[in-house]
Length: 123
Image 1 (cartoon, rainbow, N blue to C red):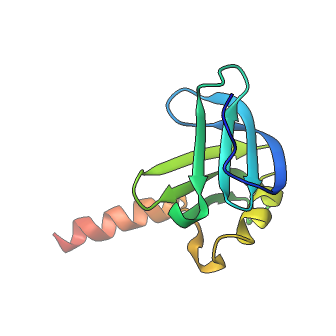
Image 2 (cartoon, rainbow, N blue to C red):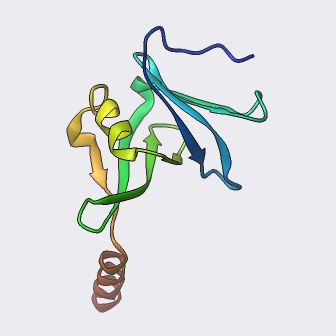
């Protein structure tokens, strides 16, 4: 069994990790970091200490009424994408540990198209 990095747990919730094939399990947010534990295979887990978190990126749709998934970008190991039953609750708890200026919205589909058209016109 995997040892948790947190000493105090703030939230435990069912979630899905979108790293390649979707894996189902539970996320645990505590005082030392963000953790994901796979429900079927105990060897598949993700532990991210708060010192390692660079940005938290939320995919916001319908003017903030629906957040289908969120990502945690680390300083060294890339981006980890998750979805959960109540993402607003998860992001509120994460905001206690991560600076709110490091919590951003992802670009919408039309923003990506706009950027690509601007970059094409500059060339």
